[in-house]
Each structure stands twice: as structure tokens, then as C-alpha cells.
Image 1: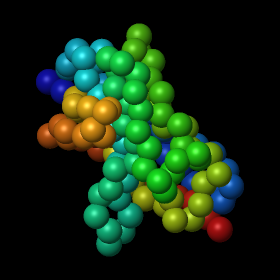
Image 2: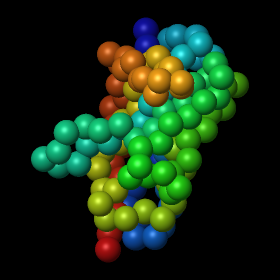
Image 3: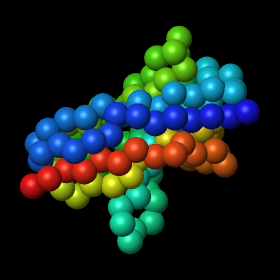
Length: 125
């Protein structure tokens, strides 16, 4: 059974940092991609970043490029999202998604039906 467990959210002041973790199980981690998404109150869930564990390629949405860094520890079946220079508009519930498909040349992300439970990130001004 596929399981994704996010952790690392919390309350931080603007300009601060947080590192989110997504611990995955139930599939062959090295063969797929994992994506990070977020959903703010009253807004749709949107994609932020993804990483392919098979080739290490990554993607960042413009809104987080240069501030967020995605990485993976394949030995621990865990993907991280390091978030720096946080802004109040980053406040949302953050979710990871996988096992996903990612085609780097075409920037095509094929979402999985599996999501974690989410972790709340609140950035105060």
C-alpha cells in the first residue's frame, strides 16, 4: 500500500525557513517522481516542485524558484522541500504526491492518485 507522510510544517516569521519531509513507502522509490503541492484557503491546490528519483531532474514553479529546493534521500525513501525566504503568501497546507511520472524534456508531470495528509505552513508578517 502506498503511503506518503509529510512533516516539518509550522509557524515561522516572514523571511524564515522550514524544511518539509515526505516519507514514502509501498512502491519502488527509485523508479518514480515525487511532487510537492500546496493549497491555501479558498484556492486550488497548485504544484510547486518535483524531483525524479530515477535521474535527479527537478522542476520549480516560478513562485518558488530561487527560494525552495527539493532533494531526495533515496536510502530513506524521503523527499525534502527546503523553503527559505518564506513570505506570508506561502501560507498553505503542503502536500506531497507520488509515485508520479516526470518527463523533464517536456516538463510533464503525471500525478499519482496518492497524497499525503498534508502539513500546515503558516508564515506571519
